Image (tube, rainbow, N blue to C red; front, side, top):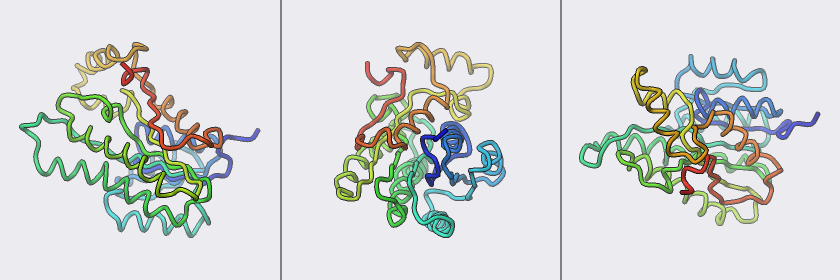
Length: 249
């Protein structure tokens, strides 16, 4: 049976946990050769083992350009082109306006904005005709959320990267889309509350979603497969909300 991503070469940054790991696993299952990046070697090794033999790990911090250079140098040695880039590495801690620190600002923008920009820029020489670039966004790009203004601002920037870059890359056939999940059951989300308050956190988030629940990481990964595959060949520049309707109300 022909898989949706058979023999395509994919990069998934921040692929050691949560949504990134789910995307890496799903891509590998769909026949892609997947380069997974992460900052911590032990977690990277575990993720690659979970994703299977079609995945390889490259230790890299997406906010460090030297790491991205090393990533793409390795890809170039092993493959002539890249078909899919998922600029997924990101994160951030919440704080109210009066408590935001310069360090928090710099760290969050370095990972979520600088890292995304240079992940895509440095992939350009290797991108195949009709390649798919997926930027991981968030429903916070479209909705206000208390104590999350820095994180939300980075995701709004990511959303506008896609709008600008599709114009700049006209003629190459490269598609760039933003995949914006709603609340998803990931270690990062669960880590926002002490274990004894996890269920209350999940219930509270589920109450904001018209479907009445939060997502599982593989549900987001299936949407990533669609954006990465030829099934979305005329989809370009959109923000694809996979949010159970949260950002639509």
